[in-house]
Length: 201
Image 1 (cartoon, helix red, strand yellow):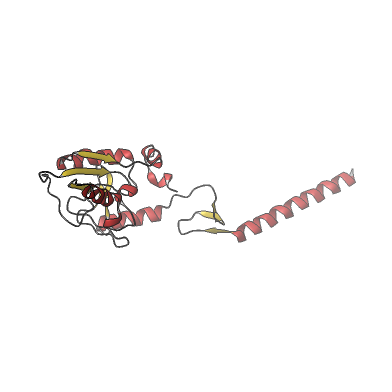
Image 2 (image 1 turned 120 degrees about the vertical axis):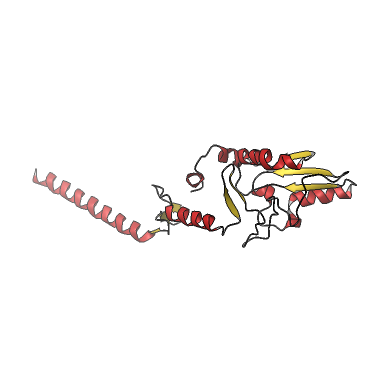
């Protein structure tokens, strides 16, 4: 009986020492980021910590008007009229269309007007105004003898629902001949999420 007890005691001691060693290794190998989230190398460990300080700081910037995007009661967010990005080569006009010039709502006679709606791929994040696909489309049509203007209503991180709402509220009054909705498959996931911070963790 005493030999059995000794074996159990040794097994328990080995277990405790192993667990303590694992705890020490994990404490050395893990780190907490500025939001309080625990990481093991590049692997985020559960539970997910909602970065409330980051959300609060972003809300403060929105209230101060120090952002390219602004709160919008209908769309969630939209470019601030006459906004210019401090970190990327883009700007929007007074109607929050990506353009360096104001665009009248009335169309120029004999000019095909195309309006585009969608996310950052439509807007052209990280590229200059001449590098967007809207600019390329306008140039291609001109080369083929078609006078056209392509209005870029894209907004970073939009889902198809927001793009459609922007068309209804902002785009229709420009009376385009053609309306294009940019789509990439991840947009469908955006449409199913109410609180984006929990989706883009």
